[in-house]
Length: 518
Image 1 (cartoon, rainbow, N blue to C red):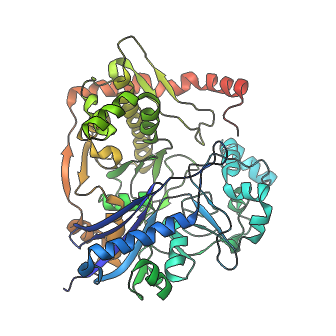
Image 2 (cartoon, rainbow, N blue to C red):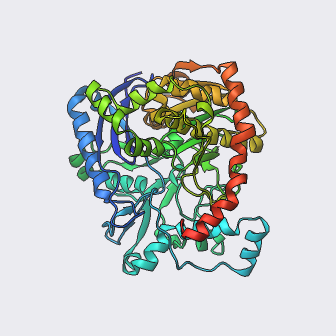
Image 3 (tube, rainbow, N blue to C red):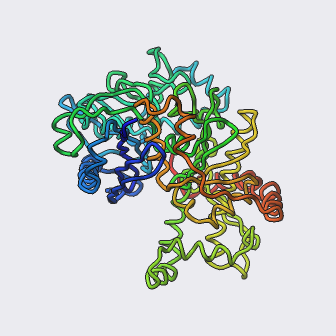
């Protein structure tokens, strides 16, 4: 078989990568560009000009072409994977009308459409009325309608970053079903836009059907790279663009998780635990299972919204000394902080953190909590408590997924920033009391997108075959029995009781201070 390659574009919140893996899962070429994640004109706002993503895509592709000329000529397919819940307004000439509002944005709309009396009764009957109201107000389309009506009136298409890239590369506004993870009226169970004009989803998100893109299945061909896109990116004109999946969905595929007996944990800005299932089920009511990169499957997921963002928060607020020391040693601050994890015992001498740094649909009044302080505690204790707190929340998610799937998750793959630390991986194995493993590359999302591409090109006949050849476990971590027992007791006797014990206080705080607003 002659060599053929897949070019993967992986666009995240803070950087974009152009990657080429071979059919054995070896990363042959990589170029990365970092950019400011967003700008904020008002507190809580997070916006980015879509041109920032596109311009940097063009740069990394041209740099990759220059560095890997021989391999570049054998690229036969391109797959895009991007950040989620970040939409762009295009006019009838497909010009960008305003900056994209990122998933991190905290603004809410005051004026939203009314549900029918029957719908409101149904939402109250299932205990989701408050959650529905919060989700509706968080929809950025409603905010634009309220505050920038002239923009919404000019909006011909309202699309995700993935569809924007597809348009810039092929001239077609088409997106993958497996990318539709946002405040949009997508029917996740049936993997389509709602067929009924009376679906509550249209009222929930306030987006007209004609403004939404054509959808195709992951692995299908969207189109070919145009002459203009070829000149800007260096990608050969006529190369096919293959529909991919979201960054988290590609991570789950790239980690080799194809059933509910395994799961993928992403230690990202938003930490997530995700599995793959043929059956549709919602680990948390009203939080859908997303379409998987694998056709006919779903990715049930639980997310910790602020996740490893808390590490950045901790560094900027509490770790100036460590940051200066790390600079002097020529290492990253995370590396130095991770070394200090070993100085602190499991349970951080009784310091326990609950990482509800942002309210959730089912816990709209929730706030973060750190309990158990004593004079023994240092910054290193707080750092370990953050790591442990995120893992406790992920364990909650795992238990929710297991309850709904009816199957035990026996092993877990990890990826994202925290997975680079063997200490964090071992802590995770101890806390979850399951085998933890990681693959041969940090670029797991890119690997997953490449798997989609190689199956689409016919190099492999199935995802199972592709994973067998392309994903390689490089490290495994087994639980320490005594540590696992400490964490089990802390989780059952302390962690799971923190929110029930404090939720009324959180409500009082909100009532007295007016924060957070909903």
